[in-house]
Length: 297
Image (spheres, rainbow, N blue to C red):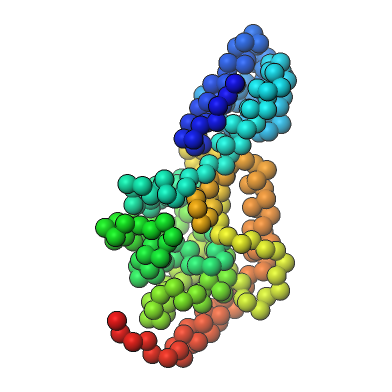
């Protein structure tokens, strides 16, 4: 019986690989013979058993059938695979004793040649100015410890150096509502809009804005990032990261990845680009400047 660990995706990935290897060996099948049954290459069998590759759900079913795995074991293989394909890391655990996550995200970004970023409610991290990032960390539900905020802000700003690497491609789709959110004082929000306009001028960056007036053709209530063209041999082809209120989700299941790709394509069609996007940034900036002067705290 396979036990799903609370350790998350990595621990369960090792358990899945070990269980699949055990089933093959118990059935007396060579890697080449099993590959023929499953319809994959022998090298993929080796990589799956070494936990450097993951089987698809059909491949997992075929593996269980080829090795005459009991129904209970076959069912648990799918439960285990699901826990690997979607790694759920609660913020209360992630941030415990580790206030700066930006370096971990930066390493992932460096391994992805293409980043597709959608945000419906806030400015994406790679576009945030320091004052905006600081305020965001301060109001986050699970909160960074006060002593960790400065380092988190510095690391987030440091991550943005990747935007100037022409070998990396970034596409952003952001709603007008996210740009109008009064997360920070007006002077910070104006600096934020200037920053977005400046980054949008880079040749490897695409910026799409979804105006409030645009008819909705799809609904995605949370932001997500598609990390594409990952370069490490142990990486999946594509990885999705979703930040929810309670946890950070990492998704690699090809079927789920396809869902996010379809949503990305629909969101992109709703967005406006180029001069129209710049005009919208200017319109929001004008509205902010017309607000009553804020008292100096």
